[in-house]
Length: 140
Image 1: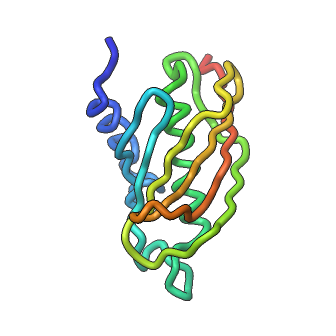
Image 2 (image 1 turned 180 degrees about the vertical axis):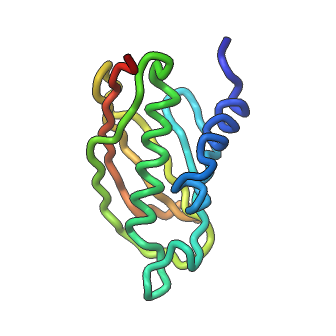
């Protein structure tokens, strides 16, 4: 039985309890056939000292949504997913509101996956462009 969109998002968000994602208030908000989107509030909890979004928080958002995308779209009954490498190019600063990270697959192999993750602000301006590679390994 295939889960509904609402059930997938609820399952993903419930898995965030007591994790970095909960600490940063990262929430999975949308997904489709080939993407997953998360959002994170921009406030003093994720600021660097000069009052703008910290690049490390942006990278954590990107890795979270990319890893969840691999988890949602791969066979995780028999496999577990781990991040291998993340890169982030920060293009614009944000002081408040929400940022959104949309993960799409560039490669969805049996063992390795490569995801493109665009982080945007509420006006759809590109804040950061990230790439995440993940690996799927057998649980047994």
